[in-house]
Length: 153
Image 1: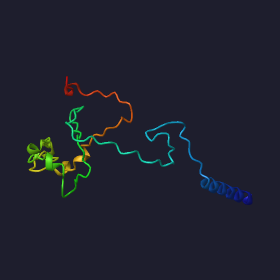
Image 2: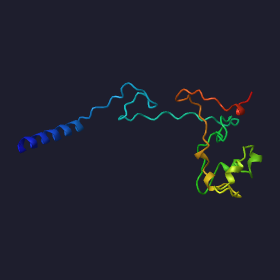
Image 3: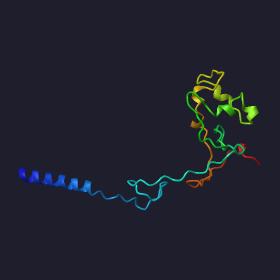
């Protein structure tokens, strides 16, 4: 009996090893995702970069408290602990001469509601919330309607 059990276990281990060596690609069942029809275990090439819209008027917001979308190129902008390129135009000190939108007063408040003389550390890294707009087609269909009070008639 021991010999039969040992033989069965060895055969099972051998079959398992062969199955791992000759891995059969999984089938996605014909379902197409945002990745396209690529199999999950196959890495496909990266999509081409979308063209970033360069220098245009501020884009309309769709809901209250929506962070404004960046209407210009930001490639190469340095935003780190030592420098913030965004504030060189959008800071209150420079906004009038550059014609840029001023940083919101809410960006000067701490979590406790204290007002600081400079941008709060939690609001310093602009591109956590503000993103540049690209000229690309939507990934999925969307029938989102802007808040009525924000639409222009």
